[in-house]
Amino acid sequence: MVNFISRGINGYTWGVAVFASVGSMLYGIDSGIISTTIGHESFLEYFDPFTPNIKGAVVSTFAGGSFFGVIFAGWANDFLGRKKTIYIAAFISLVAGIIQAASVHVGMLIAGRIVGGFSVGILNCIIPIYESEISPPAHRGLISGLHSQFVGIGFAIANWVGFGCSYASGDFQWRFPLAFQCIPSLLMLAGTWALPESPRWLIEKEREDEAYRVIKRLHSNAVDETLYKAEFNQIREQLRFEKASNAKSWKELFYKPSNRKRLILAMLVQAFTQLTGINVINYYQITIYNSLGMYGHMAQAMAGIYGLCGPAANLICIFFVDKWGRRITLIITSFLLAIDMSIVMALIATVVDGGNNKTGQGFTLLFIFLFTIIYSLGYNAIHYIYVPEIMNQAVRSRGTAIATDTNVAINVMLNQVSPIAFAHVEWRYYSLFIATNITGAIVVWWLFPETKGKTLEEINELFGDEVMITLDEAAQATSDDDLLEEKAVDTEHKETTVKKQTQHA
View (cartoon, helix red, strand yellow):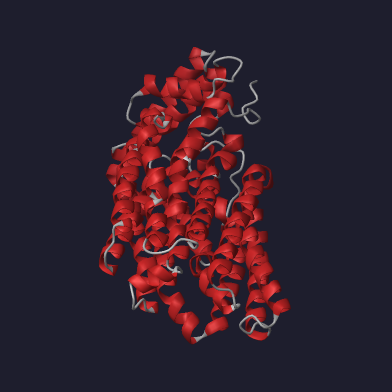
């Protein structure tokens, strides 16, 4: 019997996954570039008066655009395919970068942020789906986790570009960082044509010969054709059954109990990701450093160092999450985030006074940096991994879009209220995230199933759905025509049953 679980990742799959993650880096740069840009003196002078409400609008409208980009991706992923959707997002992002860099007033800047948000909303939805669908099951956490890894790298690059530009003067100080967003967009436009289409999408569209060639190339390190024939057969039989159930409708996503459970879990993990408080620190870290008595180059340097901590910790996560599992990692990191946030709140409330208390300042920085490390050991990668893998093919795009928009909606709310909250309740604002992190740990322990090591088709069983054929049976079927014919007849019988049940309902 072929050892499907332990098979490795070939160079082609690595290359495809890493290049697709340039889109993830684009998301990180576009998200992070604003946090340092709004701290530059020339920016504040140019857009004076830059009030807390305007600051919240500049940050939150980006997430607002992302909300609608995710909705578009939920449609485009299914009807245009994964590859074309990525290409569209790259083009829109290029336009957005040009608008922002050329802004002559706040309205134009906000418009560019909305368009940019739309593009990265598409990427934030499509890249995890695409990477999960090209991954071998034993290493899906690693491949899908590349999205979060490159988002973190992009965010770190954005911080250091901001730091470098803090030594510049005039409009260049803030226009160049905004124009820098165009570089990964151009890379994506130049290279997306070379990406293969998702084999699951191709099979769904009955382009089976093309799908088989893609699977064969993705698993070209196999000793014989048994592996990719088995995977092809499993995907095909499962999709035939799902297609018969008319599960492509939005109604089916909410009507079928197993799909409702998938959607609820996906929305919860996305909600708890935002409610860790990570983006409150990410977007407003310059404000936090100012409260610690750090201004100008020092504050920008701290942002740059902070941005390097996340990708380093995330790398540990994606290399071990397929061994640790998704569930236990989320539980542990949630509790640790609550503890860390409690310490940060206590330090800011009691020992920090504008930089005079150097010891308090140092410990506050330590626990702020530790917060992003803990977050990156858990939620940062796992919410991107877990959501597309618990969705079956029929509802993956729509379910992932709704869950991602849950994340975006909470992000918009927090981005808008955070400057006001800091101005009025100060350090007490952090108590919200202590409570939400503890709640997240309890909910994950109570409701979330473990998915590591299973194929995307086999995960259906965790939600009470039927797996039409296992990988072992699919492997046997490649050398046993009678068994394959028996499975096809069984699938056809179940398709007929599902159609009758659907018509009756």
